Image (cartoon, rainbow, N blue to C red; front, side, top):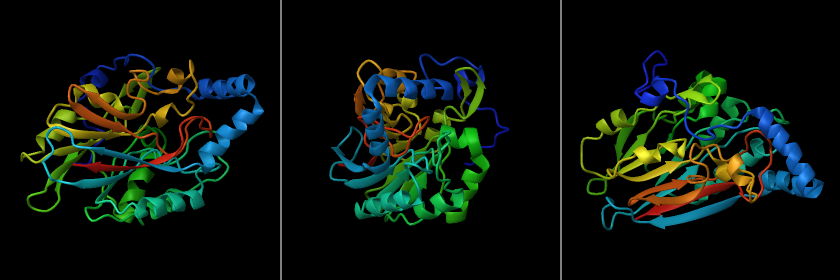
Length: 312
C-alpha cells in the first residue's frame, strides 16, 4: 500500500510526538563541528584519508546464516544496497555505476534497496539528479526482482521526486506492504516498512509512517518472512514470525573512533544496532554500513559496502 501523508500513523510513540530515547539523529551543526574537531584531533592527513575512504573504498561483505523459521534446504541469496546518498565528492555518477556493476556481479536471487538515495550534506561537489541515480539502479538485475524502501533523508528533503524517480524506472517501493515471492515450495514473504523518522516535529521528536502490525497482517501464509526497514531501531518490536530483518541508516557509525563512535551512530540504542549481524532472543537482523555519507563526506573505519547475504 502507498502511504498517504494524510493518514494517521499507527506508531503510538510517534502519534503522541514522544521524544525517542537516546541520540536519534545528528544535527548538521554538530556534524560540522565534529568534523572540525576530528581534523584538529587526528590531523589533516587522517582527515584526508577519511575522505578517500568514503570516495574510493568499496567492499562486498558476505553473510551466511540459517535463522529460525527458515525452511531447511531453502537457499536464497540477497544483494543489499543501503544509503547510497548520491552526490559528489564521494558518490558521483561514475561511482554509482561501479556500485551497480559490482552488485550485478553478485548474481543474487534478490536485490533490495534500503533508503536514503541522495546526498543532503552541505559539501556536495557533484549533484546527481534523481533521474540519474534511479536510472543507474534500474540496471540492477535479479531473478526475484529489485525492491526498495524509503529512508528518513528521502522524506525530509524530497519525498515526492524520490517516489517519482522509482516509479519512472519501475522499481517497486514497499511501504507497510508485503509480497510473496519465489517458486512453489520455496516461497517467502518480502515485507517493507514505512520510515520511522519521516516527519520532524521538534528537536529529537519524530513522527513515523511505519506500521509493523499492519504490515505483518498482510502476510497470510506460513512461508518465511524477510523484513526491510531503513532504521534498525524497530528491531525490539519485530516478532519471531520474521526470519530476518535487513536495515541501513547508521552507516556503521561512519566515523568509527574509540570514545567518539557512539556519538556518530544515529540510533536511540547507541551502538547496539550500529552495524553487522545482530542476534537477540533468537531473532536475526543484519545492519549494513551503507555506501554514502551524511553530514560530512568522510568515513573512518567503516568502509562503504554492498552486502551479499546467503540464507539457508
